[in-house]
Amino acid sequence: MIYLLCKSEEDGLNHRIEYIFDIFKLYAIKTGETNKFIVLETFPFKTSTSYPKVLFIIGHSEDVNKYLEKNIADMTENIILTITCFPNKLKRFLKYNKQIYSSKNKNGITEKYKGDNWGFKFDISYSEIDLYNNRKLNLMDNIKKSMVKIKKLY
Image (cartoon, rainbow, N blue to C red; front, side):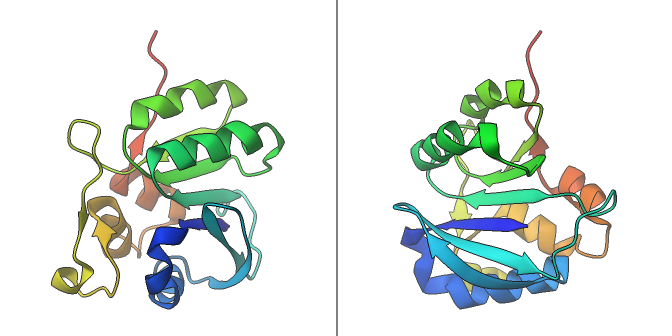
């Protein structure tokens, strides 16, 4: 799993690393940065039918879209999880045959809440809370229950 965290949330980085372990039972280390994101990679590096390659990206809509625009064609990850606003803007990336999920939102806005109110030490969205609360489910069931799948309009 590659986990991209917007730099504006860097203060909670160590707590996010704990969160990743609690949910996915994967250790995460910082392996780099882009101009907008901190890059974490998880290990053990699990990939299989039950644990596919995943990109988890948290950031502002414009930054998430620019990152995907620049990188999606070359990505090996086939599942993309986003915590961002305006998920309808992600539909244009479905042509790359990736499964794309977004955070639950109200009228396109993903609201963040003070983590302290929920037992976390970083601001958190409802989808991230759901991922945590559903952590005993297998990966795909957790994703499907906690996030919204981006679908094409026909």
